[in-house]
Amino acid sequence: MCLLYELLLNIIKKFFSLNNICRSIMKTTMDMAIAYIESVDDENFLTAVMLERDFSGRDALRIAVELELLDLIQAPKIEAIIKRIYNSDYDQAGDLFEMSTPYKIVFGDKNANADIESSFRFYKKRELTGVPQSQWMFEIFKESMNARIMASGIMSVIFTGVSAVLFENVISTTANDLDKFLQIRSIKEQLMVSGDENEIISMLEQINALAAQLAADASALLSNWQLICFMCWLNFSFMIQHVVTFIFTKKLNRFYSFGILHVTDLALMVCSILFIQWYNNFLTANLNTDPNLSQTEKDMRLMGNITANIDY
Image (cartoon, rainbow, N blue to C red):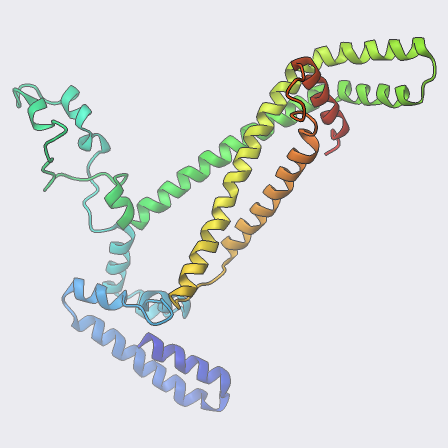
């Protein structure tokens, strides 16, 4: 019925002269759909009907949401199905620790079970029938949209928090040492045009003194940038996921839409590529070309790279 409703909408867009008759058929179709839903008492059967997919991979609920069929979506039985899909069929009133064998062994009721360890040995199958489950268990994670959304949200918060801390460390350290880095760059520019040997020696001593003060901060900056670079590589996983989904849905001849969230993932990947390219070609240039370089020479080269790219 949802497909018929969608077909009638497409006919109206193509032939506006048929608007009235199509609207009348659409209203009749909606009334029939709601009457059919109210007549079905088997929740499992109605759920199977609503989740049955067409050849493009869309189920009736998805089509109803795309067409904004509020009368259908807000029907009590359809709302119950949506909540069932969102939370899964598992009872999630339990605690994750209830499923933990070591926890039950250590903190179990010794009076109620004289030998509690005997029931929780690793080679024995646990009887979990009737035991409330935790939403963080794998089987529930596969079935519950709510658990997946919460897990994705927690991981996003952790990822964003770690990124913010790393960038803040880089920004604050660079801001504190900015004057010294600019001073080194200024001395280097003077050194390139100086012809006085004594002046050159004096400027080299100044650079060495400033470099000694910045060595620890430069190493800390490199460590933070390495972690940021690693997290940029992780950003590729978001877009790779969409590419893999696109390939498989197309091979299965199913529907795939490139939504606004996909655009943000694409922008995130592009920004990550730009940072990784800058990190490899400018920040760490010439640091690992010679395995015989001393740590002092590496530190000097690193500070030279940071000084050259301090504006970035």
